Image 1 (cartoon, rainbow, N blue to C red):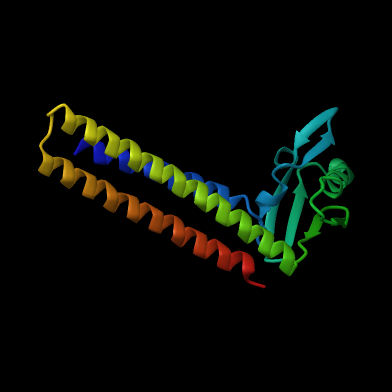
Image 2: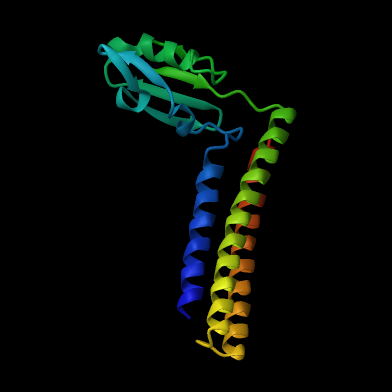
Length: 183
């Protein structure tokens, strides 16, 4: 039925939103996205780091920042240090190395609580989609547009889709929690 397909689409969007939110949570591993919000004073203005340098993660505990123009290396180092990320970059004249400190136990637990909240928000979105679908089916039944059997079948299908999507969020949450708690 069309209502089930629309509901599935809304629920897929909710799962994708949770996946995107989970990507913003820092784990103990070095990820170039950690430096996405860093702005560098260069060329007479403030520019995003990714417009003046390439950022890579040569291993799990280090980021390497390679400026396009060596003359802005000190500005990049200063921007990373003052970005409020708790990072201490060092430069050798051509490359900036940014060691990523391991997360302490308290910080890991904080991140897990944040992940659980994000997951719960995603589940609420899914339940809202289910509720809207069921209300629509009940309205169609009340107006005699569908029969009781069709209404029951549709609502059962919507519940199956709901369970499937909540399961997907639980699976994402479990994987991300494991990643955050890994030392």
